[in-house]
Amino acid sequence: MPRPYRVGAFVRANNAVMRSLVNAGVRIGTFAVLTVPGRETGRPVHIPLVVFPYAGKDYLVASYGVVNWVRNLRAAGGRAELRRGQVTEKITAVELPAEQAGPVLSFSLHSGPPGIPRLIVRLSGVTSCSPISTST
Image (cartoon, rainbow, N blue to C red; front, side, top):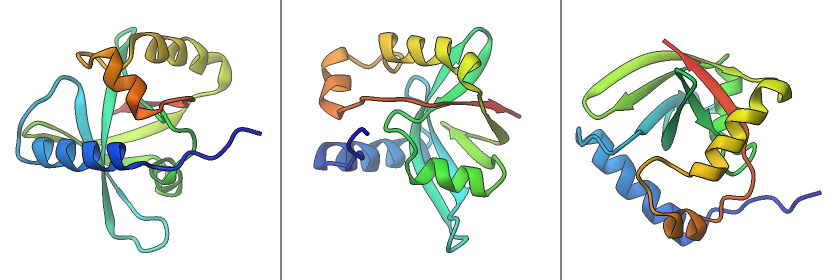
């Protein structure tokens, strides 16, 4: 069984910077801020993520496995908001079965976030992924 992922200082700092920039209306590549209600508190949780465009659709990829934002999104029935720059859209996310997830996972792992240097991706410690398709 793989060791559970623990968020390190680099990822925390990167998340804070990306969340601030996207919330300020700065459009950075395919980065977005996912807003989903917390599964226990119901308070909005804001998570900066990369939206992977693949085969004409957008995908959220849980790069660190089943983490809190994934659990929160599941508890919310897939309903959330996605903010890209100054545009906020309501989405319904659908978790993909393994057969459909494979090509998206392969793409996201090989390409990394669009526009982000490979060194930065390696420093973030990404080891596993689970794609979630989004629709508006």
